[in-house]
Structure formats: structure tokens, C-alpha cells
Length: 206
Image 1 (cartoon, rainbow, N blue to C red):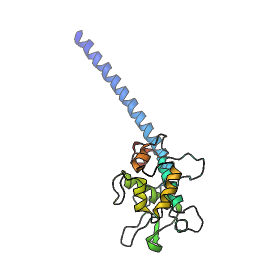
Image 2: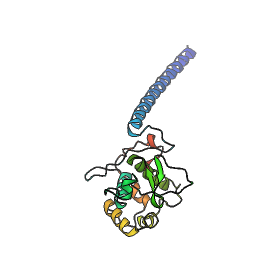
Image 3: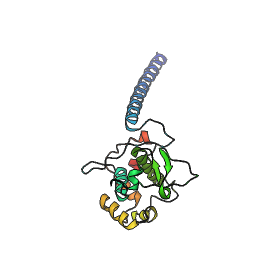
């Protein structure tokens, strides 16, 4: 009788764990489906190259931006992207990024213009390139920038006329020139509009 009771208890326990496991798998599946829908809605699924494509940040007054969006918008303003007829505007290149012949073209790059400035097919391609540029910097994969560099140090490397560039960027971000990339991005408190599942890289942990 005691053996029967023990056996029955084991069966009930196993059934309970199996039920919990089923619920967990169902929840995981639901979460995965939600993440998939969010990723599909946030990302351009054209599959150009291996880089993640991003929607352009809305660089308008009063718009709530993530820290990464704000950094990109500040850089674009310092580069003159929002002024009609400038090189960055005509080249769809908000970061005024450069390259050289012989290097692998970036997604959306159609040619090199004056002084090696990249000409992109669309503004979206240019914004994607700018974000990926700083993702590499924050991920320690850049040859020119490190997360520990201050905005002053970044400006000296990034911009030929670094003083006005630094003045515009720090004013737009409301930070001191001594602020590092890591310090600025680590202060992100609001939920990032880019789910980490989409990026494969945790902006919220910066």
C-alpha cells in the first residue's frame, strides 16, 4: 500500500512539472512571436548586407529620443545634414562618413564622392551607416574610437573643424565636452525603442 501511495505521488508530481513545462514553452513561444512581430515592424527587412538596418531617428524638437538617436541627430546637425544643398544632405550621409577605394562598400553605398565622402542611395542607408559606426565604437570594434573617449577626443578625430562640431554636439545633447560616449549612453533610462532581440546588441546596458 505504501509503495502504491509513493508511486501515485511521483506520477502526480511528474504531471505537475510537465504541465509547468508546457506552460513555460507556450509562454516562450508567445514571447518569441511578439519579439518577431516587433522586430519585423522596427527593421527594414530588405536584407541589404549583413548590417542591421535602422529607421531614421526623428530629429524634431519635442520628440522623445533614445540616447543613441539623440547622438546621431546631434552629429547630423553638426555636419550640416539638415541644411539644403550641403554635401551630407546631397549624399544622403548624415554622419558625413568617409571611405576609400578598395574597402568593402557599406550597405546602400553607391559611390565615393569628393574627398572620399560616401554617397548613399537613401537617407535611411546613411542613418543606418552612422548608427552601425557608433555601435562598433561602443562594442570595441572601431579602429578610431573607444567607449571611454570624451566628446572632445571624438571631435578631434571625427571632424576637421572640431571646435564648432563639439560646440553643436554638446549643446544639442546638453552635456559637458568631457562626457564620454559610454557615460552618455549608459545614462539611458527610458525603454529603448529598438528591442534587444532585433539588434543582437544591448543598448539598454550601455
